[in-house]
Length: 241
Image (cartoon, rainbow, N blue to C red; front, side):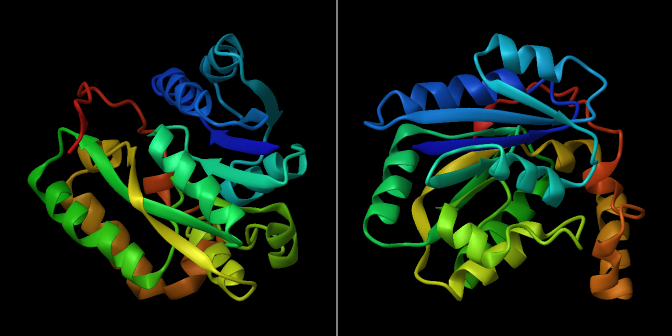
């Protein structure tokens, strides 16, 4: 069985599209699948919309992405775990490639990723830099990460000492346990943060991270880019580039 785990906080604008894309992609897989949305203290219609799309919904109150991902993993039964962000849209070729990698002995992996459109000019520059850096470093992005349950448990799951970059640390932990692959296929994920936060605000955030160092990731304060309430994307997405 494959378990798809989708953490979500106030994602009513995206969760329907995410689940629709996932269900369409899953139909081409010759295996049993389960889809779990872990609703983390949403105050909007995320949970009800997810349920109406046929997903199982588990409600928690963590406001901590690593902990929420771990809860989802422990609440599922699959031998293979796929972690997908609530604003990310997978496709059948990507899922087939990931399943094939696991069947061929990989302990886990990720994929290339692109942002949906439109993007501000600095978002387009970021897209040319960040995804290739992830691939070159052999790291999965948080938007799409998969692994065997045995490797996940051996790695200790997502590091709950961190409020961000949890996918980086799990990637590194999984790489110590076997072959970890970054697929050539790509996933489309939302570029809304690059639309709702200005260039100055984005630089301010990453300047704070550089000045403070790793300890900045050990608390929610200062990580508004990921945990802030500015989530509504008033620009209609146009799809991937």
